[in-house]
Structure formats: C-alpha cells, structure tokens
Length: 100
Image (cartoon, rainbow, N blue to C red):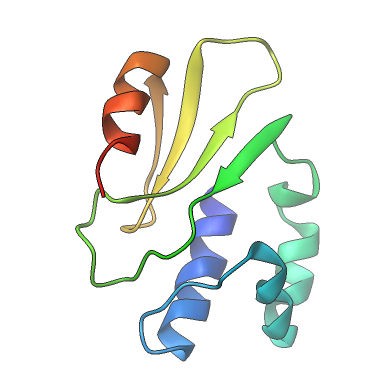
C-alpha cells in the first residue's frame, strides 16, 4: 500500500494535485512503471479499493485506498492523502471512510 501511495502522490504532483481517475492511469508514469510492477503491488491484498475524486489539497487523513487482507482478518489497511498506511480495525475504518 505504501508503494501505491508513493505513485499516487507522484502522479498528483505532475497533475496539479489531482489523483488519477483510475489506478490504470498510473501507467502514464512510464519512468516509474518498473517500480509499480516490482513493488508489493505485484502481490496486492486479496481485495483493495481506490477512492476516486480526491486531491492532495484534502486533509492529510483523507482515505485514498483500502486494502482488505487475504487472511480473513477484521483489520484493514488504510492509505491516506499524507501517504501513510494505517492498520485499523474495521469499525474504525468505517468512520474514516464516512468522511468526504
């Protein structure tokens, strides 16, 4: 997830603070594509979601993506605009996701 955060922020810096409409748009970062392909994203969580329409101008704790571990854990990985990844209980994640 932290690799995803890095690439999302590189994209946003190059695009006036806007994150991509979809993750596939990160392919436009050709010079960074090898990093993307070789990163932990090559073996992502069993399921993860990207929240579209966010910008770098949002609060630092705004959620960009959520990773659902494949282990059946009730904890989630949360990626925020600040680039930090948090491992949180699902009930706390719901509160974070409810923010605009």
